[in-house]
Amino acid sequence: MMRGDFKKLLVWQQAHRLTLEVYRLTLNFPPYEAHCLSLQIRRAVVSIESNIAEGNGRDTNKDYLRFLYVSRGSLYEIETQLLIAKDLGYITNTEYEAVDSQRISVLKLLNLLIKKIP
Image (cartoon, rainbow, N blue to C red):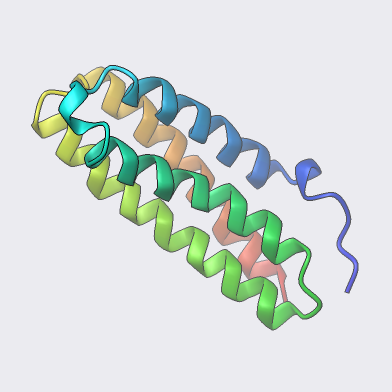
């Protein structure tokens, strides 16, 4: 099933913005977190937009949905990781609230997309 350019999907665009913001935030993590929490957060956030893109290229709606559900799981994963970063003082409450608001927006758009797929 041909779906078109995934980059035109609002959910992918918002997920991409979230990825860039998370990368900016993790640049300020302590150096000893470079291979721990910051790497885990980066992998999870990249997974969101990557799975949206990969699912978009799949042949069946069932496959597409499977990738969208993985993206949704990654959104919850980074919620936990960002809370840990906030609680450890790596990001401020204000930074956390701003990035979590972006995360929630992506989650809402993703849920809408999931509901649209038969």
